Length: 340
Image (tube, rainbow, N blue to C red; front, top):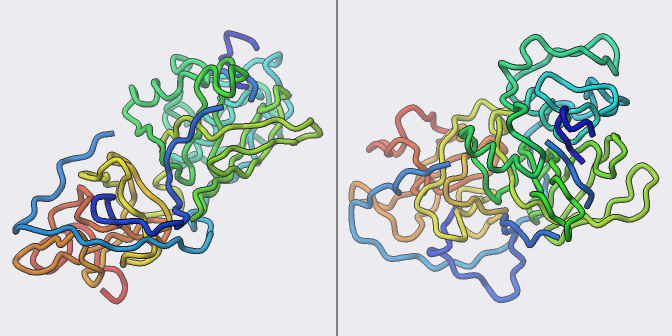
């Protein structure tokens, strides 16, 4: 649950053909089907310098390895043990609610590191909480956060990322999430499954974690009976890209409905996930020694530049809005990776 304080309570799909029976880690939104909880745009694809022919490749699934990105501490919520009866934080969220916990984790995403001397501390609030925490009372209940985050300029899509906010809209799970729910993504695996950290999933103002695949998961946290939680309706990218990384933000652009393939190496046939068009990815360096994809060429030679992301995975640079690659094979402002 999550209520407001005042309520008191790689590759684009066109360039690939999937081998029959292959199990892909497709990072997309599944059909929504828990309890109630309150309160991007990509540029045009790089222009090809010559005519090209799509390259057909088979796709295989990489081993299920968790993202290497390190999240902030998830168990240091300053108001653990308090409930809406004790008031709420200065972001306008009631203590012990999913929205208050998510707002706290977002504050840490943006580098906030202040903590009270003891936990819980009713009335304490970080002095930089409003400057480093963009969430406000006006964002509404958890089920409204997808619209509020988008209106605030943050990316909202179906692609999970470590440090992102998983969100269920009002009425999810056959209406049991009466005001929606939000949780914090702590890991993303190559099979598409995710780990979540959250408060008040079971309307008990308590912390819990959950591992979830695209088909959803059953929660039995804190002594509660089984409760089915569906795959999130959205993922809200609010400061998540910079976690444990010095990568620069760029957007996927020119990808089709399948999205851009995320690979474990700068080569095809190593797909670990997909990023939809408009998704912000964080690039740490480039190599010019990757595979050519979709027959792309530049300066009369095969285009083989790939971007290494903050979690150690790779994407084909052609479908990113990074600066146009120069004749040396690298985008201005982006360093070559070790070994080129």
